[in-house]
Length: 147
Length: 147
Image: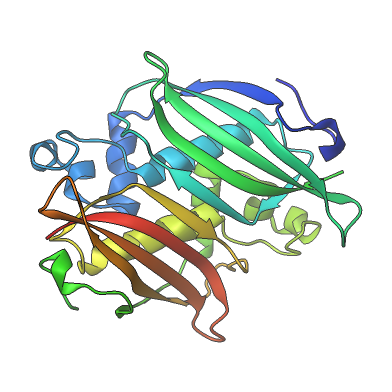
């Protein structure tokens, strides 16, 4: 895996494939119990009557797992200083035990005006089901990075 | 706590105070280990050299805990069908063991055109430090709700 050493190595349009991950049924239930205890994330039967029609992972969980996957990839470990916000979309729900792949795209690189050793790097993360490429999470987030 | 029985009971400008919560140091470290293993969320010493200057909670954790708090309040338990996305901002970092309060504001209620028994309710959640009202998380999210 690539390791970025300065935001200056990045430019709009660059994309990085980060491999994939799976949220197991046990992880889905455990996360939902802690942070999103709604019937459609917790109980198969109740989920059948929901908008989803089946038990699906919490979108919070998909997002958290994607960030975890990105951090563990190490790609921005030497430059990332934090993110100021994020815009999330969950175009389709994610079922437990369903492999997904993750891609990170650089949308913009802008040197900070006040801090010359920093840049604001707008990233887009796309998480899609491995089997059919259906997108289950899309994130746009401005990251502060070292130059 | 109020329990909403139909999206029709909601209108723009309504606000609900949901009490508060605390992320303990142990919870902050546990969440970061799983989902956001960056030095400024994990190690006091490394965090001192970070943009934050100290160990702070992952913004993902603040967001997840806020959603958990909202769900557990039960206020929308009878009507919430899911959220299609979210816009997040972390105007200030949150320190471990620092009490926060949460407020939910209704920004818009729009009946669904295709599904007359549903409405799209835009909510804003604001999480602020109890001691000085500094906002640590602001979320805007469109929720699908039963009418």
